Image: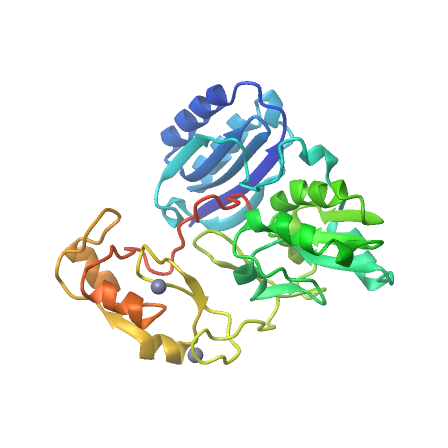
Length: 334
Ligand SMILES: [Zn+2]
Ligand SMILES: [Zn+2]
């Protein structure tokens, strides 16, 4: 067993390409996999590898003056939780759709997990909790009484805030996401509306809060974008099966790689809706070879349509069931 690390830092990077080349060389030489996004506004990384390689990576990276004080989150895992290594330069380290001039240093006040716990314990009358994540994430775990925007993509959050500005008017708003990165600029966006009395964000996000308070105000599980899928907080089950609606929070991922829908499915429905794959060669890239096919010879589709496409080899199938590739444009450091 190795380690998975996650970190981000908003810091002014003058030459992102140089950082990319250095990081790419470093990760490759250590056999790490995952994703490193670099922009002028900072760095955002999720990487897996052996413990030794990860330790080496951290000592080399934090030796750089821009990254001495990285706040790194650790979980058990390995390089093979990720399909490959990608080190790229992007316009933003999280695809946010937030205007460029609204930067992370304009964000809400950071509260430590202990301060968050205290604040909710003595909940002020005008405190509103805002889940900044997508609906498929908040479906399996969130803070009690939090507002859960019905969004499928983080880019839709600014629009949601625009349309619901009255909900936040005159309020103290505690915003949270998986590991904190999305709130950095989303809280700045909310602050830029000038409607809320105060805007807070959690230092280290849900991840750090449930490390300290597994049985606290956050109920259920923390959805994460890597092979683990869920970070366990407590035994509350908030989700419901996509097919039969019983309480359940086991994620499934449609085997049709084009659809790639993530949904919650109970054991019974998994068995009932499993699709037997044929041996004919599938099309397009990212495909299963016949040998790999047997790995997923019974796999789950989200719908009869996907089932038919998969069975007739009209679409590529994902080769690694129960492992989630990082969705395009997602926040890779939770
Ligand atoms: Zn079910
Ligand atoms: Zn599907």
